[in-house]
Length: 285
Length: 52
Length: 283
Image (tube, rainbow over all chains, first blue to last red; front, side, top):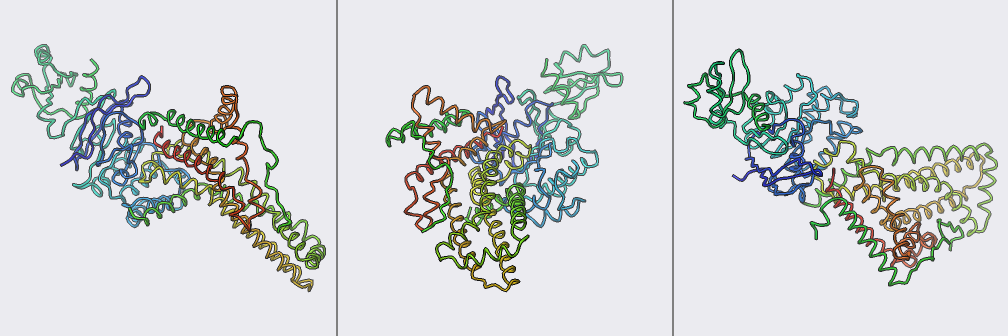
């Protein structure tokens, strides 16, 4: 199958600062991909480029369109939720539904009204009077009523209470996502979405430092708990990262023979958040 | 050409202004509308109530 | 996509403009209406007999003179409406695309399947037709209200209603004239509208500064570098419409400055195309 998103040499600079530095990536239909990186790594810029919201150099195709030239066609297939409340403040919930049903050919007005009825939002209240959690609920209700191929979420739960956060992902994944939908989520809180992902992308200073399916992680990355006296030996095998853990040292290795590693100590698959820290720091050195 | 114009918002603005300006200049030269003919005879809508 | 889809999108886009700018496009004319009506009442209803005398006088005048007097009466409330539009419309055009980007909700507008062309055209239609159209309707409502009050006064005094017929005839003529003027201005001012939209899409801060400053700079640059002033001459000739149009509305086609009109449309279209392309650079 053709990839839904395909980028080749995707770059974007602001003056001398390279926000995106020659990114090559392909995301297959049906994937739930996490774009993970620290603040300022280029997550938002990458997503904006994919949505045709900023200029870039290199090749980029999203749902078969060039985002710059065919943004309005692309947007029939793509939905977008960002961290900041992007719904216009003067608008009423009712008006947002009205507007979308006029403008978006894939918007299901009844579905949106049903979803909105499940929340405590008054359709006549203006968005500026709603709390941040409610705005996100409203946005999610609007987005879930649109039948699109690709959903792009930029730190969707940033600044929300833990309750809203959990509900957000629960509703999104149980009610909305199926085999045909592709999702690209960016976050710097990996734990939150770890269980949902089928694909992992780590980004750092505008460069993609990891591009792997979740299934491939256990085969390529290993964490070994090494006793303190064996650390010198363990360091010989080129670990990505090491840290102290309950009196032992945890080493993370990339592409090392598991047999060899087992001789060093207890081997298991690293948690994504540990892997993230390892790769971010590893790349620094 | 298209790439150059759409390189940034400044090049785009510059091109649009240049194009419009050249058209105005050329039209002015061809039709002989010249400087100094600033016509302020009719700066406002005059309402002629004695209509025909 | 079929035409029905395009029409639906356009309707929604214009409706959105109306929602967002309800104050400028609806409440401002309503407020002006209320004030005009109060002023009128203050001067006329205080002394009903004066009004009756005036209206009776109107009925006695020779036909042409009576029409002229009546037109003057119904045309009077036009001025406050027209002058408020002269302020509201340029500000709206200069701020609309700028604010779409500035308020953080640009991500919302830009993530809609709406082409840049439609977005810009919806703003243009709102400014050139919707806002003056609403004002015109409100103006009509005001005039009809006043004529209704005149009718009541005459009936109460047992006078004949001849003057009312004259007033209504003048009002309908004047309204047609205003409607034609509105359509005419929408085209005549296209270069100005295009320019304001272009700057609105371009500016990252203080669009007023860019809109006025760039024109002054261009005029100055031409004067200094080329020592000619084609640009400023043209600019000032465009300031306001030809009054011939206004007076010869019965023969609009003959009075239309066709050459100037099409020349303006050409420049306006270039500027509009620029505004549409400028929307590619949201940040």
